[in-house]
Length: 251
Image: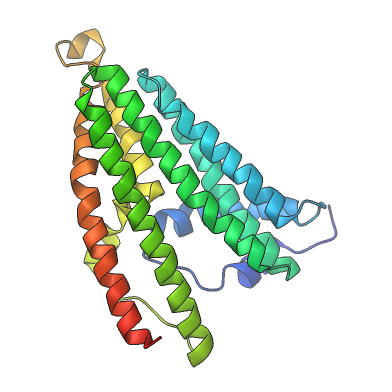
């Protein structure tokens, strides 16, 4: 284990373009992922294998959200965090070894909507199991559909931006506004699963005798409805951003 890059060398070589808007991924997950990458580059594990493990942890974590028990949601939150860490590690290992491939990029990108969809489906089932209202399942279906559109437009926008970057040989920065910092928090898997885990924590306290009288699963149901209302707005935002990107790219 003595031979190999240092933590600082890995960060410089694999994290040279931090997105300061995503403070959780870069301020927390990326800090942790470097240490996992430090171990991974000293083994024979491949980036695609890490991506596979990342997807497995993501799906496993999502499955806990299908339970009516709020404690399971907290466990699911912890497991999904492992998924998020490994989702950084695969790219870091690929960049360090200069082993980036088109298949690796595609495989990594396809795991995101799979885990996203699994999370929202599981949350819908979990909220329904807690509150017993079948209408929540239909709301969950709309949430999954909206989330899929958000993810697909995001992936295509990233592709166009990447093409522009290669053609112009310059870095393309996104606006550094407070609105994007705050508004971007719940627009992806990270933001929503944090929100759901927080709601589960509130439900755990609400079921205690001192907080008696509140419906079991009430906070998760409330946050679920808020997410269902917010996601279509993010769809509109993402589509508008994609249209602007396509117009600017002139492709």
